[in-house]
Length: 175
Ligand SMILES: Cc1cc2nc3c(=O)[nH]c(=O)nc-3n(C[C@H](O)[C@H](O)[C@H](O)COP(=O)(O)O)c2cc1C
Image (tube, rainbow, N blue to C red):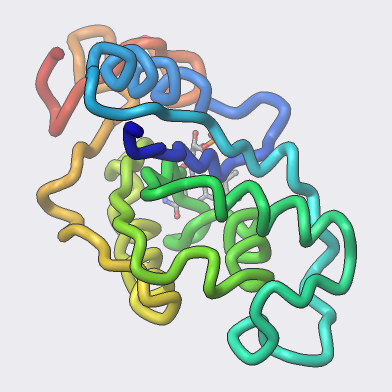
């Protein structure tokens, strides 16, 4: 059986840029024989802000509500993850933070890596995700060795804004 990799899409904005780097990532993963992959979109898991009495680390898989259970089951399906993240105020999107706060054992001891996009490739958001991953006992890869997408570093740059540009690059060069 092939390992199942999940791409977790953090941004939920209706006009999000995330779909462009997501397409880029999917295209590359589809060429790999050794794994299955699926997308876990935070848009499909709109949880209320965390309000539970206890921490999920103390109450593993004791889901208080069906929407939390659905997220837990979805994460349980994966053998490893790639988190696709943007950066909001030097952190990762609250949609993902809130989701991660609702789970714990579902992630334990599964490898995770990160793809960021935006002005600085969401470097600070990924840095923050490293800390969250450490707490969730996610064995994570070093940020600097992951692919970092910048939304546009190509000659059209002066003409296109982050949200409009469809050019993608890895660490600043055309790919
Ligand atoms: C509320 C907000 C805060 C942002 N803060 C940052 C930031 O701190 N650093 C950065 O590089 N980009 C920042 N940006 C720009 C986003 O990274 C950029 O708009 C990106 O396209 C957002 O991803 P999304 O379109 O997939 O949601 C911010 C955007 C928003 C909406």
